[in-house]
Length: 269
Image 1 (cartoon, rainbow, N blue to C red):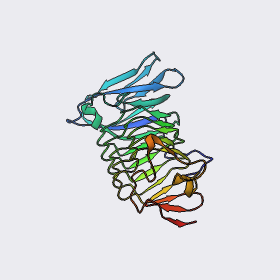
Image 2: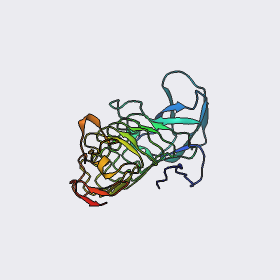
Image 3: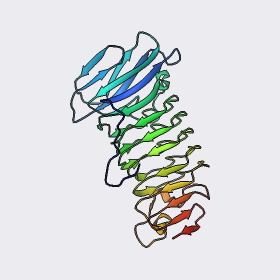
Image 4: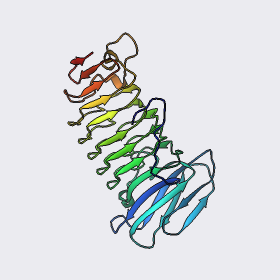
């Protein structure tokens, strides 16, 4: 879905932000989340096993942890949070419970960003739905090998490698894209199309190793601006990056006045 003047509406039903996890002998029974709150307010968490907690706001990074009594699948619900993850920065330690998440869905429209490295190598995560997400940190979903579906809002910025090597990613929806740093979709080998809305910047190797990516829709740029040859308004070259940002030669970039292939050929005006 791509409607410039409206937000994506998620109608599955539910409340809060729900993280479905499967705790196995490989993940262990312990899990810990980094939580960002709304307006420095308290938040609540229900662990899906009959226990819950109300948590007061405190300064600094807020972590909350839990140990389940037995292995199984649980739906953890966070109420009144603006961000969740396992870590705030890329490069921090990985944990056995990184493999626990199966699905993350924000029904509240309060989740507005994902910290860097938050779910890196969450190898069993299949979908991430956040209709109001505005910023995506460095590699928060990198190497999520089973991630198939992503829904975002009006994204102001994707930092480096947001979805790098999400090799199963097939469905990616957003309202607008804004600024992309490097390697955002590098290695998304199953990805076939991207509907990005307005775009301000691409950078180094954003579409590298995406052999099946054949259509990229850019809602606010002409063919000339996509190719970076117009007198004004061109897509900004992050780190000096040039069209087509390592997309394959047959990839079709759809602008407001035509289509240009990754090899620079204009096939429709």
